[in-house]
Image 1 (cartoon, rainbow, N blue to C red):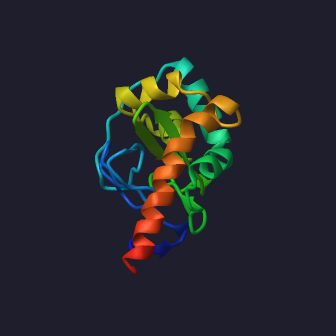
Image 2: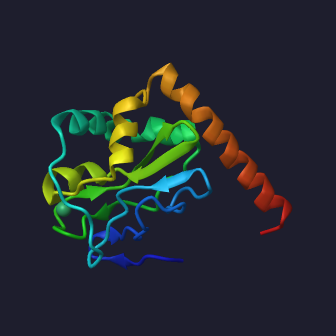
Length: 160
Ligand SMILES: [Zn+2]
C-alpha cells in the first residue's frame, strides 16, 4: 500500500506528469495530470480564466465523471500537502480521443492557489471535452469504462 495516513487523512501519492499510472486508473490510454506532492517540483505559470472556468466544471462533476469511467472512490479526503488548508477526495477523467487524462479533484486548488500550470495538452483537452453530466461526456467516457472493465476481467482471470 503506497501513501500513508497523516494529520490530514490519506496523502496523495505522487505520479509523474503525463505518465500512464495514477491512484485510480492505469494503462496505455491513461495520462496522469496534477498528482503533485510536497518535495516534487512542478510547472508553475498563469492559467487562463477560460481554462480555470472549464476545469471548475470537471472538478464539480468528479462524482459523475468517476461513475461514467468506473473510477474507484479514494480511501478518504486528503489535505493539500503544500498548505494543509484544503481537503479533497475525488478524482475525474477528461476524455480526449484515444487518451484519458486522469486528475485529482485537488488540481483546481493547485492551479488557483499554488500557481500550478498543467501540461498544455491537458489544458486543450479540458477546453475541448464535453463536461461531466452531459450525454456527450457519457458517450466520450464509455470506451474508457469498457477498457477498465476488461482490465478488471483480466485480473480476475489471472487470479490476482
Ligand atoms: Zn494548498
